[in-house]
Image (cartoon, rainbow, N blue to C red):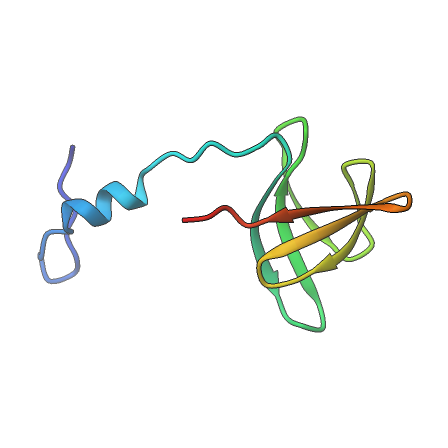
Length: 90
């Protein structure tokens, strides 16, 4: 493993490197991140084809529509049902 340093030449602790480079197994449909403001929220999602997409309220996704975006989850309305996708736990 290569050594990383900050602007002062201080080595990055091994634990930080390990945490930053760990792989996480995500479900087929996954919420990757939340961005934007309360008035205009958006989310970064992975769809069933493995494509990463930006979505906003009202956008089609996973056979439904993005119905809600909070700071930790999105709600996809599919007919009369709802599917909640949570941010991965760290």
